[in-house]
Image (cartoon, rainbow, N blue to C red):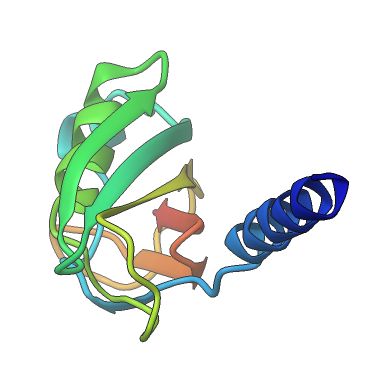
Amino acid sequence: MKVVRLLVMGLLLSVSGFAQNLPDPVLRGAQLPMYPPLAELARVSGDVKASFVIDETGAVTSVNVNSANDLLSKATQENIHTWKFILPKDVHRTEWRFETTFHYRLTGIIIGRGPTGKLTVTLDSFRDVEVVAE
């Protein structure tokens, strides 16, 4: 009986260890994040933390955001809903949960000419997105 119990415990530990080391899905498509125009006019910047769920097809099914600013929160939520992922092969799950942070920054520097300033978007990974506007 002890041998069976140890074998089951070992199997459970192996499975839980495997689950913690799953490879990340690959972001294969997304709309370009934009700085919300009203937030830019109001000179609002800051970080927005979000959690989201991906289904077995790689589509984002839900997004929850945490930010003090509604304009930045709404822009983040809308953008994450456009994300499409390629999931790791041979890993059978019905949903994947992740977190990301959007960093919205205003430079105060105007480069170039035209009605809108320069927009720079940097994704180190889908877990960290920086949106910088002049």
